[in-house]
Length: 511
Image (cartoon, rainbow, N blue to C red; front, side, top):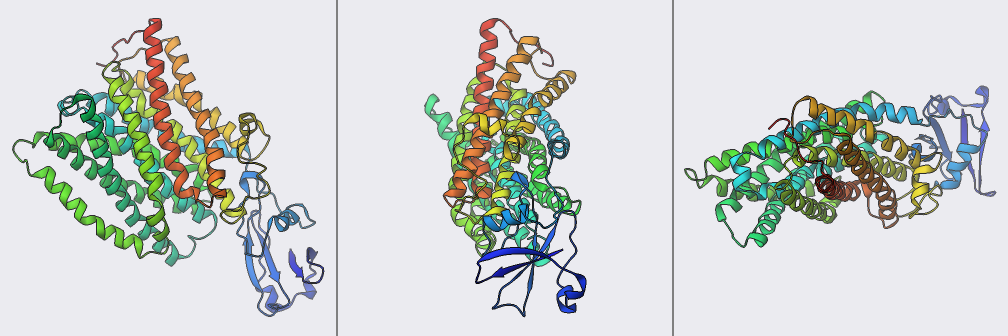
Protein backbone atom coordinates (compact mmCIF):
# COMPACT_ATOMS: atom_id res chain seq x y z
CA UNK A 1 0.00 0.00 0.00
CA UNK A 2 1.48 3.36 -0.97
CA UNK A 3 0.82 7.08 -1.11
CA UNK A 4 2.06 9.01 -4.14
CA UNK A 5 3.06 12.53 -3.08
CA UNK A 6 3.88 15.38 -5.40
CA UNK A 7 6.75 17.41 -3.97
CA UNK A 8 6.50 20.91 -5.44
CA UNK A 9 10.06 21.92 -4.56
CA UNK A 10 11.88 18.83 -5.83
CA UNK A 11 9.38 18.23 -8.69
CA UNK A 12 9.57 14.46 -8.48
CA UNK A 13 7.36 11.60 -7.38
CA UNK A 14 8.25 9.35 -4.50
CA UNK A 15 6.49 6.18 -3.49
CA UNK A 16 6.66 5.62 0.21
CA UNK A 17 5.53 2.68 2.25
CA UNK A 18 3.05 3.55 4.93
CA UNK A 19 2.90 2.21 8.39
CA UNK A 20 -0.57 1.63 9.73
CA UNK A 21 -0.18 3.77 12.90
CA UNK A 22 0.70 6.87 10.86
CA UNK A 23 -2.48 6.89 8.77
CA UNK A 24 -5.34 8.96 10.03
CA UNK A 25 -8.83 7.51 10.16
CA UNK A 26 -10.13 9.95 7.55
CA UNK A 27 -7.36 8.94 5.14
CA UNK A 28 -7.83 5.24 5.80
CA UNK A 29 -11.40 5.51 4.54
CA UNK A 30 -10.11 6.73 1.17
CA UNK A 31 -7.47 4.07 0.64
CA UNK A 32 -8.46 0.69 -0.73
CA UNK A 33 -6.25 -2.35 -0.37
CA UNK A 34 -4.35 -3.36 -3.48
CA UNK A 35 -6.06 -6.11 -5.42
CA UNK A 36 -4.52 -8.28 -8.10
CA UNK A 37 -5.50 -5.88 -10.86
CA UNK A 38 -5.81 -2.47 -9.20
CA UNK A 39 -3.60 0.03 -7.43
CA UNK A 40 -5.21 2.80 -5.40
CA UNK A 41 -3.15 5.95 -5.94
CA UNK A 42 -3.67 9.09 -3.86
CA UNK A 43 -2.38 12.31 -5.45
CA UNK A 44 -1.77 14.98 -2.86
CA UNK A 45 -0.65 18.55 -3.57
CA UNK A 46 0.06 21.31 -1.08
CA UNK A 47 -2.97 23.24 -2.34
CA UNK A 48 -5.37 20.32 -2.02
CA UNK A 49 -4.05 18.48 1.02
CA UNK A 50 -7.33 18.57 2.99
CA UNK A 51 -9.35 17.11 0.13
CA UNK A 52 -7.47 14.03 -1.02
CA UNK A 53 -9.18 12.34 -3.95
CA UNK A 54 -8.69 8.69 -4.77
CA UNK A 55 -7.85 7.60 -8.28
CA UNK A 56 -7.97 4.01 -9.50
CA UNK A 57 -5.24 2.99 -11.87
CA UNK A 58 -4.93 -0.27 -13.76
CA UNK A 59 -1.34 -1.04 -14.57
CA UNK A 60 -0.25 -3.36 -17.34
CA UNK A 61 2.65 -3.38 -19.76
CA UNK A 62 2.46 -3.26 -23.54
CA UNK A 63 -1.00 -3.68 -24.96
CA UNK A 64 -2.34 -4.44 -21.51
CA UNK A 65 -1.68 -0.92 -20.19
CA UNK A 66 -5.06 0.27 -19.00
CA UNK A 67 -4.86 3.38 -16.88
CA UNK A 68 -7.22 6.09 -15.83
CA UNK A 69 -4.88 9.02 -15.44
CA UNK A 70 -5.32 12.48 -14.06
CA UNK A 71 -4.57 15.48 -16.27
CA UNK A 72 -1.34 16.10 -14.38
CA UNK A 73 -0.01 12.58 -15.08
CA UNK A 74 2.52 11.79 -17.75
CA UNK A 75 4.43 8.77 -19.06
CA UNK A 76 7.26 9.25 -16.55
CA UNK A 77 4.84 8.85 -13.66
CA UNK A 78 3.53 5.64 -15.19
CA UNK A 79 7.05 4.37 -15.64
CA UNK A 80 7.87 5.18 -12.04
CA UNK A 81 4.88 3.18 -10.90
CA UNK A 82 5.75 0.24 -13.12
CA UNK A 83 9.43 0.20 -12.21
CA UNK A 84 9.48 1.73 -8.74
CA UNK A 85 9.58 0.15 -5.37
CA UNK A 86 5.85 -0.23 -4.96
CA UNK A 87 4.70 -3.80 -5.01
CA UNK A 88 2.17 -4.03 -7.80
CA UNK A 89 0.75 -7.36 -8.88
CA UNK A 90 1.30 -7.93 -12.59
CA UNK A 91 -1.88 -8.43 -14.53
CA UNK A 92 -0.34 -8.69 -17.98
CA UNK A 93 -2.25 -10.80 -20.48
CA UNK A 94 -0.39 -13.78 -21.86
CA UNK A 95 -0.69 -15.16 -25.38
CA UNK A 96 -2.60 -18.11 -23.97
CA UNK A 97 -5.10 -15.90 -22.16
CA UNK A 98 -5.66 -13.81 -25.30
CA UNK A 99 -6.18 -16.92 -27.43
CA UNK A 100 -8.50 -18.44 -24.82
CA UNK A 101 -10.71 -15.35 -24.75
CA UNK A 102 -10.71 -14.84 -28.53
CA UNK A 103 -11.05 -18.49 -29.63
CA UNK A 104 -14.63 -19.23 -28.60
CA UNK A 105 -16.17 -15.98 -29.94
CA UNK A 106 -14.08 -16.44 -33.12
CA UNK A 107 -15.42 -19.96 -33.72
CA UNK A 108 -18.98 -18.89 -32.93
CA UNK A 109 -18.54 -15.94 -35.30
CA UNK A 110 -17.15 -18.27 -37.96
CA UNK A 111 -20.15 -20.57 -37.73
CA UNK A 112 -22.37 -17.52 -38.13
CA UNK A 113 -20.44 -16.58 -41.26
CA UNK A 114 -20.72 -20.15 -42.55
CA UNK A 115 -24.47 -19.77 -42.09
CA UNK A 116 -24.36 -16.51 -44.04
CA UNK A 117 -22.40 -18.24 -46.79
CA UNK A 118 -24.99 -21.03 -46.97
CA UNK A 119 -27.75 -18.42 -47.20
CA UNK A 120 -25.96 -16.54 -50.01
CA UNK A 121 -25.28 -19.81 -51.83
CA UNK A 122 -29.00 -20.60 -51.63
CA UNK A 123 -30.50 -17.20 -52.46
CA UNK A 124 -28.24 -16.59 -55.48
CA UNK A 125 -30.63 -18.88 -57.36
CA UNK A 126 -33.78 -16.99 -56.28
CA UNK A 127 -35.71 -15.07 -58.93
CA UNK A 128 -35.13 -11.72 -57.22
CA UNK A 129 -31.33 -12.17 -57.20
CA UNK A 130 -31.35 -13.34 -60.82
CA UNK A 131 -33.60 -10.52 -62.03
CA UNK A 132 -32.19 -7.77 -59.78
CA UNK A 133 -28.49 -8.65 -59.87
CA UNK A 134 -27.59 -5.31 -58.22
CA UNK A 135 -28.46 -7.01 -54.93
CA UNK A 136 -25.06 -8.71 -55.10
CA UNK A 137 -23.41 -5.26 -55.19
CA UNK A 138 -25.29 -4.32 -52.00
CA UNK A 139 -24.33 -7.52 -50.14
CA UNK A 140 -20.79 -6.49 -49.02
CA UNK A 141 -21.94 -2.93 -48.24
CA UNK A 142 -24.82 -4.11 -46.03
CA UNK A 143 -22.77 -6.89 -44.46
CA UNK A 144 -20.16 -4.21 -43.84
CA UNK A 145 -22.63 -2.42 -41.56
CA UNK A 146 -21.39 -4.67 -38.75
CA UNK A 147 -17.98 -3.07 -39.23
CA UNK A 148 -19.26 0.43 -39.90
CA UNK A 149 -21.77 0.52 -37.06
CA UNK A 150 -21.98 -2.47 -34.70
CA UNK A 151 -18.24 -3.17 -34.38
CA UNK A 152 -17.57 0.55 -33.99
CA UNK A 153 -20.23 0.67 -31.29
CA UNK A 154 -18.64 -2.37 -29.61
CA UNK A 155 -15.20 -0.73 -29.75
CA UNK A 156 -16.50 2.54 -28.26
CA UNK A 157 -18.39 0.85 -25.45
CA UNK A 158 -15.51 -1.59 -24.77
CA UNK A 159 -13.16 1.35 -24.26
CA UNK A 160 -15.65 3.00 -21.88
CA UNK A 161 -16.10 -0.32 -20.05
CA UNK A 162 -12.35 -0.85 -19.62
CA UNK A 163 -11.97 2.69 -18.30
CA UNK A 164 -14.85 2.19 -15.84
CA UNK A 165 -17.21 4.72 -17.43
CA UNK A 166 -20.07 2.22 -17.58
CA UNK A 167 -20.03 1.55 -13.84
CA UNK A 168 -22.29 4.53 -13.19
CA UNK A 169 -25.90 3.58 -14.08
CA UNK A 170 -26.94 7.04 -15.24
CA UNK A 171 -23.93 7.44 -17.52
CA UNK A 172 -24.35 3.88 -18.78
CA UNK A 173 -28.02 4.41 -19.67
CA UNK A 174 -27.26 7.72 -21.35
CA UNK A 175 -24.51 6.15 -23.47
CA UNK A 176 -26.76 3.27 -24.51
CA UNK A 177 -29.70 5.47 -25.56
CA UNK A 178 -27.50 7.95 -27.41
CA UNK A 179 -25.60 5.22 -29.25
CA UNK A 180 -28.77 3.36 -30.25
CA UNK A 181 -30.20 6.57 -31.77
CA UNK A 182 -26.88 7.26 -33.52
CA UNK A 183 -26.78 3.72 -34.95
CA UNK A 184 -30.30 4.09 -36.40
CA UNK A 185 -29.37 7.43 -37.95
CA UNK A 186 -26.23 6.01 -39.54
CA UNK A 187 -27.98 2.81 -40.67
CA UNK A 188 -30.67 4.74 -42.57
CA UNK A 189 -28.12 6.99 -44.30
CA UNK A 190 -25.72 4.16 -45.15
CA UNK A 191 -28.53 1.88 -46.35
CA UNK A 192 -29.88 4.59 -48.64
CA UNK A 193 -26.44 5.42 -50.05
CA UNK A 194 -25.60 1.72 -50.53
CA UNK A 195 -28.74 1.27 -52.62
CA UNK A 196 -27.91 4.38 -54.69
CA UNK A 197 -24.36 3.07 -55.28
CA UNK A 198 -25.73 -0.34 -56.31
CA UNK A 199 -28.18 1.24 -58.76
CA UNK A 200 -25.46 3.41 -60.32
CA UNK A 201 -22.88 0.61 -60.54
CA UNK A 202 -25.48 -1.70 -62.09
CA UNK A 203 -26.80 0.93 -64.47
CA UNK A 204 -23.47 2.12 -65.92
CA UNK A 205 -22.36 -1.23 -67.49
CA UNK A 206 -25.83 -2.15 -68.75
CA UNK A 207 -27.00 1.31 -69.79
CA UNK A 208 -30.53 0.49 -68.65
CA UNK A 209 -32.34 2.03 -65.67
CA UNK A 210 -35.40 0.34 -64.09
CA UNK A 211 -37.24 2.56 -61.60
CA UNK A 212 -39.04 -0.40 -59.99
CA UNK A 213 -35.76 -2.18 -59.36
CA UNK A 214 -34.25 1.01 -57.95
CA UNK A 215 -37.15 1.48 -55.49
CA UNK A 216 -36.96 -2.21 -54.49
CA UNK A 217 -33.23 -1.93 -53.81
CA UNK A 218 -33.67 1.25 -51.78
CA UNK A 219 -36.55 -0.11 -49.67
CA UNK A 220 -34.83 -3.45 -49.06
CA UNK A 221 -31.58 -1.73 -48.04
CA UNK A 222 -33.32 0.68 -45.63
CA UNK A 223 -35.38 -1.98 -43.85
CA UNK A 224 -32.44 -4.41 -43.67
CA UNK A 225 -30.00 -1.82 -42.34
CA UNK A 226 -32.42 -0.48 -39.74
CA UNK A 227 -33.68 -3.82 -38.37
CA UNK A 228 -30.26 -5.49 -38.41
CA UNK A 229 -28.66 -2.55 -36.61
CA UNK A 230 -31.40 -2.49 -33.97
CA UNK A 231 -31.03 -6.22 -33.25
CA UNK A 232 -27.24 -6.27 -33.26
CA UNK A 233 -26.68 -3.09 -31.25
CA UNK A 234 -29.02 -4.40 -28.54
CA UNK A 235 -27.05 -7.65 -28.39
CA UNK A 236 -23.75 -5.73 -28.32
CA UNK A 237 -24.80 -3.71 -25.29
CA UNK A 238 -25.75 -6.90 -23.45
CA UNK A 239 -22.50 -8.67 -24.36
CA UNK A 240 -20.31 -5.77 -23.19
CA UNK A 241 -22.15 -5.34 -19.90
CA UNK A 242 -22.01 -9.11 -19.28
CA UNK A 243 -18.28 -9.20 -20.11
CA UNK A 244 -17.67 -6.39 -17.62
CA UNK A 245 -19.50 -8.31 -14.91
CA UNK A 246 -17.54 -11.51 -15.66
CA UNK A 247 -14.13 -9.71 -15.68
CA UNK A 248 -13.59 -10.56 -19.35
CA UNK A 249 -11.99 -7.98 -21.62
CA UNK A 250 -14.87 -6.92 -23.93
CA UNK A 251 -12.32 -5.96 -26.61
CA UNK A 252 -11.67 -9.69 -27.09
CA UNK A 253 -15.27 -10.91 -27.36
CA UNK A 254 -17.61 -8.09 -28.40
CA UNK A 255 -16.50 -7.54 -32.01
CA UNK A 256 -16.41 -11.27 -32.97
CA UNK A 257 -19.89 -11.80 -31.55
CA UNK A 258 -21.14 -8.76 -33.47
CA UNK A 259 -19.74 -10.33 -36.63
CA UNK A 260 -21.10 -13.81 -35.87
CA UNK A 261 -24.68 -12.57 -35.80
CA UNK A 262 -24.18 -9.64 -38.16
CA UNK A 263 -23.60 -11.48 -41.43
CA UNK A 264 -26.32 -14.08 -40.94
CA UNK A 265 -28.90 -11.60 -39.64
CA UNK A 266 -28.24 -8.99 -42.32
CA UNK A 267 -28.11 -11.41 -45.25
CA UNK A 268 -31.21 -13.28 -44.10
CA UNK A 269 -33.16 -10.03 -43.71
CA UNK A 270 -31.99 -8.73 -47.09
CA UNK A 271 -32.99 -11.91 -48.93
CA UNK A 272 -36.38 -12.14 -47.20
CA UNK A 273 -37.32 -8.46 -47.56
CA UNK A 274 -36.13 -8.30 -51.19
CA UNK A 275 -38.15 -11.40 -52.09
CA UNK A 276 -41.31 -10.01 -50.43
CA UNK A 277 -40.97 -6.68 -52.23
CA UNK A 278 -40.18 -8.44 -55.51
CA UNK A 279 -43.30 -10.59 -55.22
CA UNK A 280 -45.45 -7.52 -54.60
CA UNK A 281 -43.93 -5.17 -57.17
CA UNK A 282 -46.78 -5.74 -59.63
CA UNK A 283 -49.77 -5.89 -57.25
CA UNK A 284 -48.60 -3.45 -54.54
CA UNK A 285 -46.45 -1.05 -56.49
CA UNK A 286 -46.85 1.58 -53.77
CA UNK A 287 -45.16 -0.51 -51.03
CA UNK A 288 -41.50 0.20 -51.86
CA UNK A 289 -41.95 3.99 -52.28
CA UNK A 290 -43.92 4.15 -49.00
CA UNK A 291 -41.14 2.38 -47.10
CA UNK A 292 -38.52 4.74 -48.53
CA UNK A 293 -40.53 7.86 -47.65
CA UNK A 294 -41.30 6.68 -44.10
CA UNK A 295 -37.65 5.94 -43.30
CA UNK A 296 -36.42 9.23 -44.74
CA UNK A 297 -39.05 11.13 -42.72
CA UNK A 298 -37.94 9.34 -39.51
CA UNK A 299 -34.32 10.41 -40.00
CA UNK A 300 -34.65 13.85 -38.31
CA UNK A 301 -35.97 12.17 -35.14
CA UNK A 302 -32.87 9.98 -34.78
CA UNK A 303 -30.60 12.95 -35.57
CA UNK A 304 -32.29 15.00 -32.82
CA UNK A 305 -31.97 12.20 -30.24
CA UNK A 306 -28.28 11.65 -31.03
CA UNK A 307 -27.48 15.39 -31.15
CA UNK A 308 -28.91 16.11 -27.69
CA UNK A 309 -26.82 13.33 -26.08
CA UNK A 310 -23.36 14.45 -24.93
CA UNK A 311 -21.87 11.00 -25.56
CA UNK A 312 -22.80 10.85 -29.25
CA UNK A 313 -22.97 14.50 -30.33
CA UNK A 314 -19.38 14.64 -31.56
CA UNK A 315 -19.63 11.31 -33.41
CA UNK A 316 -22.86 12.45 -35.09
CA UNK A 317 -21.11 15.47 -36.56
CA UNK A 318 -17.67 14.02 -37.30
CA UNK A 319 -18.20 10.28 -37.80
CA UNK A 320 -19.67 10.27 -41.30
CA UNK A 321 -16.49 10.26 -43.36
CA UNK A 322 -15.26 6.79 -42.31
CA UNK A 323 -18.75 5.27 -42.46
CA UNK A 324 -19.57 6.54 -45.96
CA UNK A 325 -16.04 5.91 -47.27
CA UNK A 326 -16.18 2.34 -45.92
CA UNK A 327 -19.54 1.80 -47.62
CA UNK A 328 -18.06 2.89 -50.97
CA UNK A 329 -15.04 0.61 -50.52
CA UNK A 330 -17.33 -2.33 -49.68
CA UNK A 331 -19.46 -1.54 -52.74
CA UNK A 332 -16.35 -1.94 -54.89
CA UNK A 333 -15.99 -5.39 -53.37
CA UNK A 334 -19.65 -5.98 -54.23
CA UNK A 335 -18.97 -5.06 -57.85
CA UNK A 336 -16.23 -7.71 -57.91
CA UNK A 337 -18.63 -10.22 -56.34
CA UNK A 338 -21.38 -9.41 -58.88
CA UNK A 339 -18.95 -10.04 -61.74
CA UNK A 340 -17.32 -13.14 -60.24
CA UNK A 341 -20.44 -14.97 -59.03
CA UNK A 342 -21.76 -15.05 -62.59
CA UNK A 343 -18.67 -17.02 -63.67
CA UNK A 344 -17.88 -19.03 -60.53
CA UNK A 345 -20.97 -20.07 -58.58
CA UNK A 346 -18.80 -21.66 -55.90
CA UNK A 347 -17.50 -18.31 -54.68
CA UNK A 348 -20.80 -17.33 -53.06
CA UNK A 349 -20.57 -19.69 -50.10
CA UNK A 350 -17.00 -18.66 -49.24
CA UNK A 351 -17.31 -14.87 -49.67
CA UNK A 352 -18.97 -14.11 -46.29
CA UNK A 353 -16.55 -16.49 -44.55
CA UNK A 354 -13.27 -15.05 -45.81
CA UNK A 355 -14.47 -11.45 -45.44
CA UNK A 356 -15.92 -12.10 -42.00
CA UNK A 357 -12.83 -13.81 -40.58
CA UNK A 358 -10.58 -10.98 -41.75
CA UNK A 359 -12.92 -8.34 -40.38
CA UNK A 360 -13.30 -10.12 -37.03
CA UNK A 361 -9.61 -10.54 -36.34
CA UNK A 362 -8.56 -7.06 -37.42
CA UNK A 363 -11.40 -5.52 -35.38
CA UNK A 364 -10.10 -7.27 -32.23
CA UNK A 365 -6.61 -5.89 -32.84
CA UNK A 366 -7.82 -2.37 -33.64
CA UNK A 367 -10.05 -2.31 -30.57
CA UNK A 368 -7.20 -3.43 -28.28
CA UNK A 369 -4.75 -0.86 -29.68
CA UNK A 370 -7.36 1.89 -29.36
CA UNK A 371 -8.11 0.97 -25.73
CA UNK A 372 -4.40 0.99 -24.85
CA UNK A 373 -3.95 4.43 -26.42
CA UNK A 374 -7.02 5.83 -24.67
CA UNK A 375 -5.66 4.58 -21.37
CA UNK A 376 -2.06 5.73 -21.80
CA UNK A 377 -2.24 9.23 -23.27
CA UNK A 378 -4.61 12.03 -24.29
CA UNK A 379 -5.87 12.06 -27.87
CA UNK A 380 -3.22 13.53 -30.17
CA UNK A 381 -0.25 12.64 -27.92
CA UNK A 382 1.67 9.44 -28.60
CA UNK A 383 2.65 7.39 -25.51
CA UNK A 384 6.34 6.77 -24.96
CA UNK A 385 5.97 3.03 -25.53
CA UNK A 386 5.08 3.82 -29.20
CA UNK A 387 8.45 4.29 -30.90
CA UNK A 388 7.14 5.05 -34.39
CA UNK A 389 3.91 4.82 -36.33
CA UNK A 390 4.94 3.23 -39.63
CA UNK A 391 6.98 0.28 -38.40
CA UNK A 392 8.37 -2.41 -40.67
CA UNK A 393 6.19 -5.52 -41.11
CA UNK A 394 8.71 -7.72 -39.29
CA UNK A 395 8.43 -5.63 -36.13
CA UNK A 396 4.64 -5.59 -36.43
CA UNK A 397 4.53 -9.38 -36.07
CA UNK A 398 7.81 -10.52 -34.53
CA UNK A 399 8.34 -8.32 -31.47
CA UNK A 400 8.26 -10.26 -28.20
CA UNK A 401 5.47 -8.38 -26.42
CA UNK A 402 2.73 -5.85 -26.90
CA UNK A 403 0.53 -5.63 -29.97
CA UNK A 404 2.80 -7.79 -32.20
CA UNK A 405 2.22 -10.66 -29.80
CA UNK A 406 -1.53 -10.21 -30.19
CA UNK A 407 -1.10 -10.08 -33.99
CA UNK A 408 0.72 -13.43 -33.90
CA UNK A 409 -2.05 -14.98 -31.83
CA UNK A 410 -4.67 -13.73 -34.29
CA UNK A 411 -2.67 -14.99 -37.28
CA UNK A 412 -2.42 -18.42 -35.66
CA UNK A 413 -6.22 -18.62 -35.68
CA UNK A 414 -6.54 -18.09 -39.45
CA UNK A 415 -5.57 -21.50 -40.84
CA UNK A 416 -7.25 -23.80 -38.26
CA UNK A 417 -10.32 -21.56 -38.23
CA UNK A 418 -10.75 -21.63 -42.00
CA UNK A 419 -10.18 -25.40 -42.08
CA UNK A 420 -13.02 -25.86 -39.59
CA UNK A 421 -15.30 -23.57 -41.58
CA UNK A 422 -14.41 -25.11 -44.98
CA UNK A 423 -15.03 -28.67 -43.87
CA UNK A 424 -18.22 -27.63 -42.10
CA UNK A 425 -19.46 -26.33 -45.46
CA UNK A 426 -18.32 -29.56 -47.13
CA UNK A 427 -19.99 -31.70 -44.46
CA UNK A 428 -23.27 -29.87 -45.01
CA UNK A 429 -23.00 -30.66 -48.73
CA UNK A 430 -23.22 -26.97 -49.55
CA UNK A 431 -21.59 -24.96 -52.29
CA UNK A 432 -20.40 -25.96 -55.73
CA UNK A 433 -16.67 -26.55 -55.15
CA UNK A 434 -14.86 -29.73 -54.20
CA UNK A 435 -12.22 -29.43 -51.45
CA UNK A 436 -9.24 -30.75 -53.37
CA UNK A 437 -5.74 -30.25 -51.86
CA UNK A 438 -4.85 -27.52 -54.35
CA UNK A 439 -8.10 -25.68 -53.60
CA UNK A 440 -7.51 -25.87 -49.83
CA UNK A 441 -3.93 -24.60 -50.12
CA UNK A 442 -4.87 -21.78 -52.50
CA UNK A 443 -7.82 -20.68 -50.39
CA UNK A 444 -5.81 -20.75 -47.13
CA UNK A 445 -3.01 -18.75 -48.74
CA UNK A 446 -5.48 -16.06 -49.86
CA UNK A 447 -7.08 -15.94 -46.39
CA UNK A 448 -3.73 -15.77 -44.55
CA UNK A 449 -2.46 -13.02 -46.84
CA UNK A 450 -5.66 -11.02 -46.32
CA UNK A 451 -5.43 -11.13 -42.50
CA UNK A 452 -1.68 -10.38 -42.43
CA UNK A 453 -2.17 -7.28 -44.61
CA UNK A 454 -5.12 -6.11 -42.51
CA UNK A 455 -3.29 -6.51 -39.18
CA UNK A 456 -0.35 -4.45 -40.42
CA UNK A 457 -2.64 -1.75 -41.81
CA UNK A 458 -4.51 -1.71 -38.48
CA UNK A 459 -1.31 -1.08 -36.51
CA UNK A 460 -0.31 1.84 -38.72
CA UNK A 461 -3.80 3.29 -39.18
CA UNK A 462 -4.86 3.32 -35.50
CA UNK A 463 -1.63 4.98 -34.34
CA UNK A 464 -1.75 7.49 -37.18
CA UNK A 465 -5.34 8.40 -36.37
CA UNK A 466 -4.43 8.86 -32.72
CA UNK A 467 -1.58 11.18 -33.62
CA UNK A 468 -3.93 13.18 -35.87
CA UNK A 469 -6.41 13.53 -32.96
CA UNK A 470 -8.93 11.24 -34.69
CA UNK A 471 -10.60 8.81 -32.30
CA UNK A 472 -9.86 5.32 -33.74
CA UNK A 473 -12.87 3.87 -31.91
CA UNK A 474 -15.08 5.82 -34.33
CA UNK A 475 -13.01 5.70 -37.50
CA UNK A 476 -10.58 2.76 -37.72
CA UNK A 477 -12.85 -0.29 -37.77
CA UNK A 478 -15.11 0.93 -40.64
CA UNK A 479 -12.08 1.42 -42.88
CA UNK A 480 -10.47 -1.86 -41.83
CA UNK A 481 -13.54 -4.05 -42.30
CA UNK A 482 -14.27 -2.39 -45.65
CA UNK A 483 -10.70 -3.03 -46.77
CA UNK A 484 -11.17 -6.59 -45.52
CA UNK A 485 -14.23 -6.96 -47.77
CA UNK A 486 -12.37 -5.58 -50.78
CA UNK A 487 -9.21 -7.62 -50.14
CA UNK A 488 -11.12 -10.79 -49.31
CA UNK A 489 -13.40 -10.67 -52.35
CA UNK A 490 -10.53 -9.69 -54.63
CA UNK A 491 -8.16 -12.39 -53.38
CA UNK A 492 -10.95 -14.97 -53.49
CA UNK A 493 -11.74 -14.03 -57.10
CA UNK A 494 -8.04 -14.34 -58.00
CA UNK A 495 -7.87 -17.72 -56.24
CA UNK A 496 -10.88 -19.08 -58.16
CA UNK A 497 -9.52 -17.77 -61.45
CA UNK A 498 -6.14 -19.37 -60.71
CA UNK A 499 -7.81 -22.68 -59.89
CA UNK A 500 -9.78 -22.47 -63.12
CA UNK A 501 -6.58 -21.90 -65.11
CA UNK A 502 -4.66 -24.80 -63.53
CA UNK A 503 -7.60 -27.14 -64.05
CA UNK A 504 -9.21 -27.47 -60.61
CA UNK A 505 -12.72 -27.10 -62.06
CA UNK A 506 -15.88 -26.71 -59.99
CA UNK A 507 -17.61 -29.93 -59.00
CA UNK A 508 -21.18 -29.84 -57.77
CA UNK A 509 -21.64 -30.79 -54.14
CA UNK A 510 -24.98 -29.39 -53.13
CA UNK A 511 -26.57 -27.94 -56.22
